[in-house]
Image (tube, rainbow, N blue to C red; front, side, top):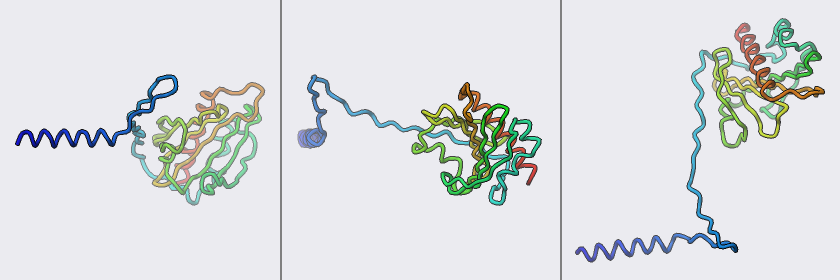
Length: 195
C-alpha cells in the first residue's frame, strides 16, 4: 500500500511540474523568475465626527469674506461645474497678493475613498481637517499643485486644490500642501457654520 501511495504522490508531483512553465532564458543567459504577488492595503479613514451634506451648498459661499481675506484671496470667487468630479459644483478664488489659486469642489457622486484606489495613481497621505478625516493628495509629475480631500459624508467629499498661479518664483509643493490644508480647515469651518 505504501508503494501505491508513493507512486501516486510521485505522479501528482510530475503532473504539477509538467504544467508549470519554465522561465525563459534570455539571450545574455539571464532568467527572469516570476515576481511574487504583492498586495497593498489602502489606509482606512477614521470615522467622521458628523456628516456635512454638500447637496445644496453654494461652493462660492463656503468661505466668508473674512476667511477669504485671511487666506489672501482678494479676487472675487468664480463658480463653475467641474466635469472631472461628476459635474461637481466648484469655485475658484485667486490671490493677487500671493499669486496662488484655491479651488473648492463639492463632490456628491463618490466618496473620498476614490483617492485610495490603485486607479487614482496619486500619493495620498492621511490628515485631519477640523476634526474630519482627510487626505493630502500629491499627483506625481504635478509639482505646482496640492489637494486636500475631506471626508464629509457617505459618498461625498470636499476637494480643496491649492496651486501656483504662475508666480515668478514657483512655490514648493510642501508650501502648496500647507496652503491647501489651511484652505480646507477654513472651508470645513465655513460649512459647519452654515449647518
